[in-house]
Image (cartoon, rainbow, N blue to C red; front, side, top):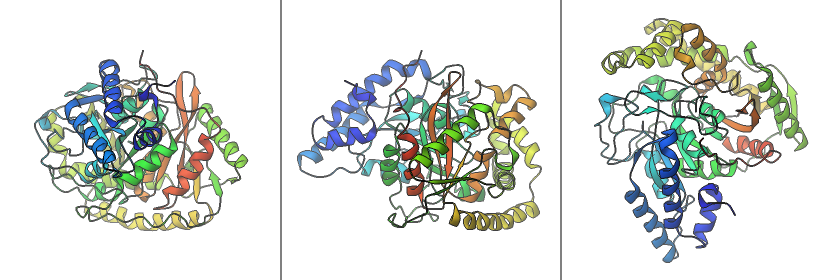
Length: 464
């Protein structure tokens, strides 16, 4: 019989709600797992076991009163250290923020609590949440429990490693250029980047976000099953008046054509044979499940990625350049230099042009998705990279940057994206990405379930 920490979030919520196991028992099992495996992977960098057990006791007490604690009834969750959690440091992987203690929960954290989720700890991110690798001078490097030689992804690498190792059932992540989808891919998990505005965001510990983050940054879940992503999204997306971009999702009972556009190499991005094979395999699974799959050219990805770079670098050059200098962390400075070279110096004219071009591009994609509500494409053009390869040289960074084209493009469009794990190749996880219309995460989850149903369930990994 599986250990409690091997259960999915959906299984945990079902068993706790039926009172076959208590939330305290579930929490303690995951805390024991954290103690056993976290020292070898450094996924969770802030721990508070008594706080977690107190929250579990509240869930059990509500059940004894015949009250429903919420959709995440007793489910262990981790929170990334770049969002506020009351009483804990919002470090964002920075030494200069080690003592920035949040006075209140961010909306996503308060939503998880109200849904009955049990927050076990806070997970690592690279400095400034700037990379697809997870290492910083404050918390150190996180390792991938599936394969220590490869990145766990970034910037939500700690979250992905924690879920893959069984420390939690759901990991909270954020994504402005792939930071949910790539860690899910690298750690052999599923990860959902919701539509912009779907999950409310706000950090009282920091100034309001600049325009790039307002338009492109989101919070979302990583998990070991598609059903887990579904309940996590339901919890995370509850309304909160603190986010002016928040949009209540429409009903998800609307019909949609089961049509999939297959883009093996969108905009000519290089794609290795293993990734191409995974895409063809996923396409076959969808066809067998009744979807019509056609290999077609999708609207521009490179233009979307260029707009992402302009909006993100406009923000960083305007508001974070001095912070990069103060933190004086070599890896993030190198990555920022490389990204700035790609984007160029962003001024008023280029920023306004990017915002104008974005509207036209979103329109083009929305028209395309009237015919094809699902785009099947790579998460990355390569299998998960070796640790720290992005900072070895500018040539290495350019290789990583090119492979992440679809991750950089999607946030510009504000549309949801789903990374679906499909297997392993050469000792490294592999998967595919699904992109759908805004506020129609239900379509992506439906397609994701059909891909997932043919493969083996995602297992917890014992770090070696």
